[in-house]
Length: 98
Image 1 (cartoon, rainbow, N blue to C red):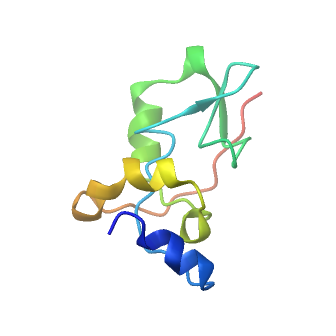
Image 2 (image 1 turned 90 degrees about the vertical axis):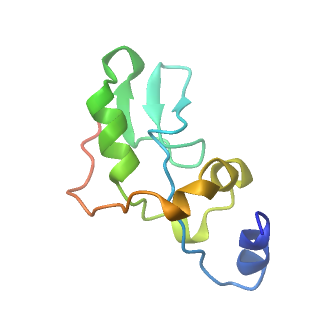
């Protein structure tokens, strides 16, 4: 079940899941900025030293527009149990901080 997302992608079908990037896991680049993942640099683009619990909560609840066709197995695995957890809410676009 954990790998069915790959079958969907191979057949050009989107996946319905809750990506918790920016909360459950973070990608910190060489400039010390927090990004959703290695594929989505620039969002939210906040320096790690300024990344707060409020940022974690916001990103946990934020649906990611890239999620339906995400190819990152680690992201899918980290969010597997979230299918049953809190819904995500649409919000205004992220402001990129540099």
